[in-house]
Length: 598
Image (cartoon, rainbow, N blue to C red; front, side, top):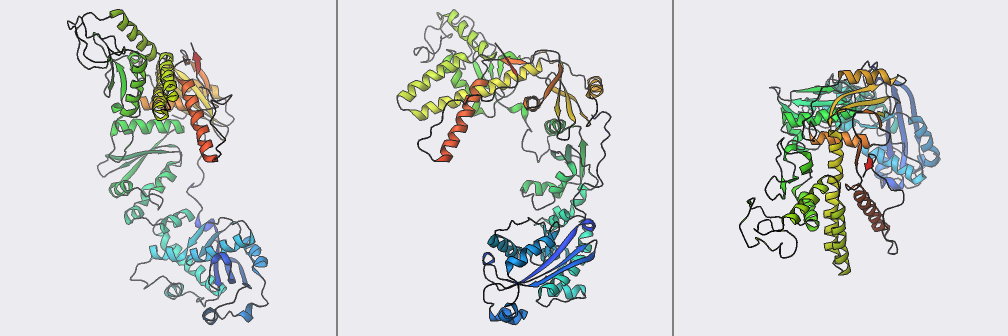
């Protein structure tokens, strides 16, 4: 949906190419012991760039500790040899300067790197956080067991017939390792590894299926959008989204992907279909739509958005509130509250409503003119229901209760807020704090959904809303929303005049008809994504056709109170200070970015 974009992708955008990267192959000789205690006796390093040796580094080090006899016999480095050598404090800064900006390479790298990190910690020098390649690990994943009996440096040097053989001296071993590295890069290249990131991914503990399916990421765009893993028949297996499709899909074939179901999905996948989008928000919306329409088997979330629980006012002679999961188009938005995240959350909100409003809770189908003279439940005796099941019930009282329900569904929670606050005060006075907290949570569940519900209805009532948000590079993401559904998106390049882009977006966005029931034309989840984007600081309204406001008492103020209270309580618990107590809402606390109307 991009309009007139002139953005050009960089050369490959896949990582640090091996031929363009500087490597420092390092080897240490040590006196053994704990890396945190030092013990380095010799450092040897070879700097490589473009396959050529550009510099070498070699020095003995006085470790400050005795060298064990068996290590002295192995390396030839004795206490006498290092007696006049420089100390670690003189050598290590020079080595770090030598290796700065490069990728460290070592054979059995965890051993060498642990001693270097320990030396930095001992001297209070910051560790530069080098990227590291372990030639031993790389050899294990690129060489077959029938080629070499093990992956020791001496074995690999002999197998590749390097010009320098390892001698247990630092520089010789570093030179031998550098030659081995070139041969291993040739092997890894045949497996598709062309960057440092590819090599490290290859060295990760990935399954054979993950490694052999890496080619599925080849040719994918380095752009925001959605992606679909498909099987041999073209059926969708998994839908995802990312700001960089290629990078995200590549991650499925690395050790960072640990989900069992994803490993299973990758064994079945035969291709990845990208859907490039103009903006990140458009990508998320497309993901939601694809999951809802295609029902890919490996997506767990959002596969059944229509199954979310709602509270609805029934259409009966004596209406009641019910928790339902399936809605049809005949139910107007003014009779609904939701969707809730779970049935438990919906039931909690319903309890808060029933505390304040004397509406019936029974599920019995009642006649328009009931004949019973006996109440069906105890709620009538407790004054909690006008008992429309009785022949002589107070019709005006029940009509008033239904009017209160309509007010609540229209965004006025004051009656419920007052009733719940009174109940919490009674429980707190009786030191029944846990019960009081339950009522607080019930009111919180109701207020959060009520605010979102009113905001969604506001969005659904607008035939068109166009809004823009600045991008990190100085451009603009612009979206056209019609009846609560994303109709179009575009990205305005840096320095360009946004007006022509907005005009083209308006004329090319999808035509969407109003459903006529006050509800959004598309998915509720999509409307929530749009609202979240509209509420972000920095988002600007460009134009709209209706009102952009929600009722002042719909629950937003309650949600902010609960959020502030929860945040302050967390700070109190973290501080461990018994004299600190959570206060009320902080002065100047955040308020809804949508206007409030009475």
